[in-house]
Image (cartoon, rainbow, N blue to C red):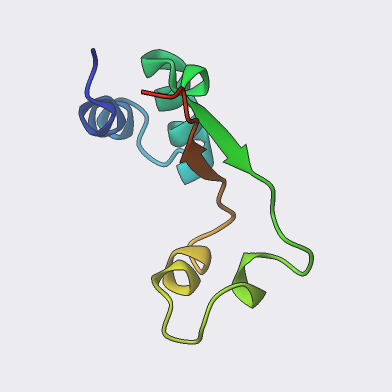
Length: 76
């Protein structure tokens, strides 16, 4: 199994200046993330309304739009 973080690092070096979302989508496709992860739908009003003022998610959102995933339960 491929390490997603290593794939992200390689993609960032290979395609400097690419948007974070593009790198993430490419890494997800390479490691087959869609097979075991489900995208969490954005709540009404956006992610920044979902968390407190000191939430790490707010800092990440300042860099641009995000997609949030959760691991799908396969009963393992």
